[in-house]
Length: 245
Ligand code: FPP
Image (cartoon, rainbow, N blue to C red):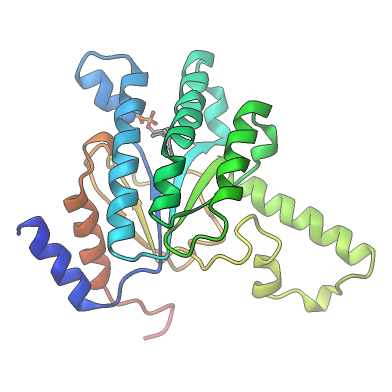
């Protein structure tokens, strides 16, 4: 089906996912297939990020979360870590005026305090400058680990219980969620993973309990608007039962 037809069909169908999360995978393999260094794959991946942010904005999706850097990614070779971080920093700097113009609100999920001070400052500036935007919320999961997020929440809850701010019996799913990094965000409706791996990889473990999963063999740098629309179309044609019949 032509891309425009699919886009119109998606819009006409109506039950768009409010929150889409993406595990962007396959940059390294994309580069290897071309005999290029891994960083060339990440560079190509940034172009896909730009395309998909525009596509999500065009569909009026409320929240797009991109798994940009996991805490496990620090274990990659130092040059690769630094190249990914520089790409992130340069892209944020370069695209800030586009984000502002397109009414995109940038937020992050994860521990950005551990990033170097220059990188942190540029991110914080972009977050600050876009905070009143009312269009797409672009949530970059950065230095993120789902298990650490849950442990951090438990630590904060323990402190609040010990100091009497909350009582153990107050703790329900809503209150627990409010201690997570994603406080205030609805859970993802759809999680897309590129490059064919059938894993969650420590991503939003609490928040994806009822999320629809969509795995495509397409490598992230090759992921097109049409692939994005296909994922949404698949989501729209599923029945979400949340454990009911
Ligand atoms: C996964 O591919 C990709 C990453 C760990 C990094 C993704 C980061 C970017 C695309 C740059 C971020 C920029 C912005 C602006 C959000 P992989 O290296 O794990 O690929 P492989 O599994 O084929 O080796």
